[in-house]
Image 1 (cartoon, one colour):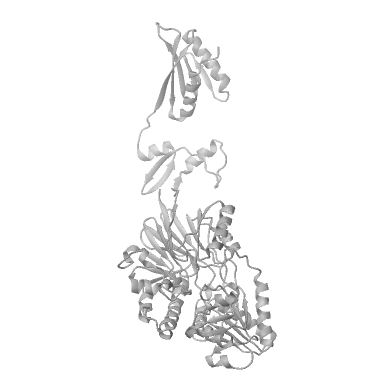
Image 2 (cartoon, helix red, strand yellow):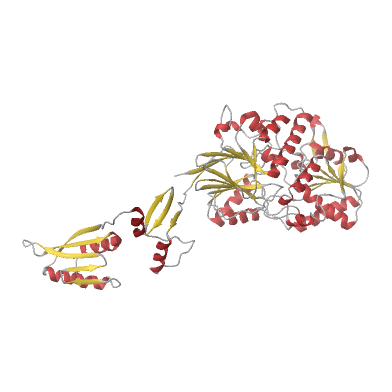
Length: 598
């Protein structure tokens, strides 16, 4: 039986470093190629030695697909393609292709230029890697080679994020990447058609969470920011440059306008100016409201939000600062946090998920003393708030996607093991499908049962309908009798007459015969009469004839009785029937073997 193999090299029972290998119909596909925010050693990148111990990856992979531009999904791409070695196609959407190199270069600068790490990819490697990228549009089917095709669906989450359907022949897998089933202030909700894949590979970051209403969360966020600013405190909001940042900017911009507030709002520069530029460029990927208002006023040109200079962090008085990155593991957000952490008037609002090992994760778990580089400790006195403006699907959203796509099997990645376990049980209970959650380096094998499509001739369908059977129902299988013709790799079911005509063949009649021995003291004619009466009493709905030439006929079945002069009481009953009445013929021979009623 054909099967599909799925092996996570990253994001197996873990968040971060997404990299999933799929083997389907003899093709090998790598889904995402991310880095882990919580590590600075070899564990930062996926372990590609799983694919091959030495040499390049090109001959082992048919293609690489990147779902969106977040570094935990694309951060290892230049390392994989330029340092390990891969020359095949890398597929991603147009916005992902535009934004990915900016984030990769920023990540490289922090790691190499600021931290002085070696054994890392260079700016040139990022450029060379991006030359291998093949951009695609939503709902566009791309033929990777003769057998392998891929198609992208809208995933919400961040600008350009897509879910991918991978198809080889009749087998298919859908990979969600990160997705969001509820629209937010700048993007729509994820959508996929009822494609019924063999496996749906879904993220499960918030596997056990059902989030409260978005409106309540937004009100709460604005209230906390407002109160802090009113009492003269500073608010730090660590964000990743794209996605949540734009959503929260739109939220604060409209609130400041409405309340006529004067406290400055800043955004750490560079990256975000570029980011907003790309949002304007790819306006079609945003939601309906932004597209409508874009004509009168660009939602991404902010009146109250100004570019941030690092000297502003020491300015007295209230302010709100958006700074990157979002988990406080490096960069400007961490610098500002160190300056403001000692004042209880200040506040840090963490708007999304933080990976274990990051400063964000530590302070969310209530750590009040942090060990920084150079053995220095930092006292955390400012207020720490967590508000999920995360653009990931929650448990309800994941269930909603399963209802949409109707997969035959489910596989969870990009989540914590305990939470996955809970969701796995829920999915298996509710949908009666198998759900898997492999760890990194563990392979899940799913046996597929591909259905073979067959065209049915209209005449055959009409004939079936005329026979008065139940009306065709798409969800109920039914038996059809006909002749199967295979031509040019396609199958058709037609009536036998049509098949004979098309193939220029003459019909042969095939009949089955069977002998049944029976002890009966009556004459041959009387025995036949008794058989006729017996069958009449049992087969009430069939036409049964007693013909003068000494035969009984039931449908196409002919019954005769003979005996020899030596043993006149031992009757030999001959039955003969055509293949259409195979069932009835077998039934009659079994019935007559039991003898006749006395």
